[in-house]
Image: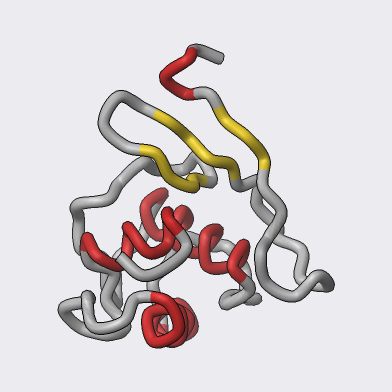
Length: 117
């Protein structure tokens, strides 16, 4: 692993009984440091209902790590993912999001940094 992707595994900061089903670590690059599950390093894209793929799986893993998602990590942005995103946004992102239930750049920062941005 190169210095640009140096990582450190972190335990979930939520309830001690919550165990993530994804390996989540802190990734550091020249431009950004934040949590990742390794599916996508996106931070400046919008995701919402009907989207699918690795970016959605990244969101699901990060939500799972924070204790907000318990359904299958299937990479599909459906109602359960939308509700989990909204609940995380209410608890961690303050008024910085564009629309609750949609992953916007502010939500990516909250998911990757774990708190208010």
